[in-house]
Length: 336
Image (cartoon, rainbow, N blue to C red):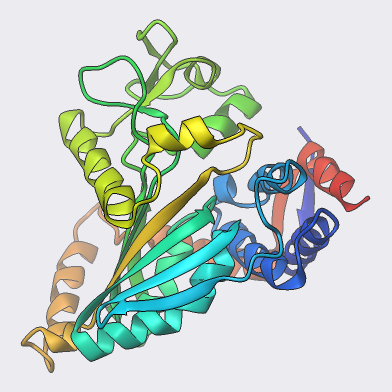
């Protein structure tokens, strides 16, 4: 399969132009493009340009409001709500970030309930700015049924990713982002596209039997939770944190209301922000955490979560990224 080399600025422009040609206003298009650019910059292909056809399909079907204007409210001193107005999540996240940070610094801890949005992105891109500003940050979101509860054969939970960010002063924050599924669904989709098999333990086929064929997982099968019953319990927890707290759809409810156009369903996200200077160790928390990171870094074979993403970032900023030529042609087709 031949590839096309693009600079990250070319990635951003391609996404903006394609979204605007299909019903997005400039604000929403730029916010989504920022997210896709960040994913490509950090070698997260499953949430980069690969997602653009899904974004476009959601606009073309009328499911997503490309001109949405988010509304940010303070529900209590420590709870912010951002109503995305049926648009894509990135603009609502950008416009509510400062309110969440302010509430966390005022109260020591705060939450953001993001509602009525279509979320299609990696969570680390949303957590990193807050962690870089000095706040311990967590984020959770749901999807549609894709993961089988432990012991069952039918999907009920979304892939239900979780993300955690820890500030490191003048160093890039430590941020990890992982699905509660054994593998992110986007990675399974890329494996199917590229004709690659998966490792054992990722999913089951339509008969409930283990399979390493990504197409069988996607076509009537399902993903397994990581770590068996432990990952399954975490997926359940995220359903409750995201939908149970905010009134948004659980993953099984989103499947009923979604039009299955290939884009993300309407749903929510929960973010938590913590000011570490307000928890009794205002002077020493940063240095204390660094002693743990130092112990980890000197262990043979170990690495700090997120390090590979940061190393990819510098290289891709300088040299650009490659995407399959077929995907590039598809994306160019959205411009007319």
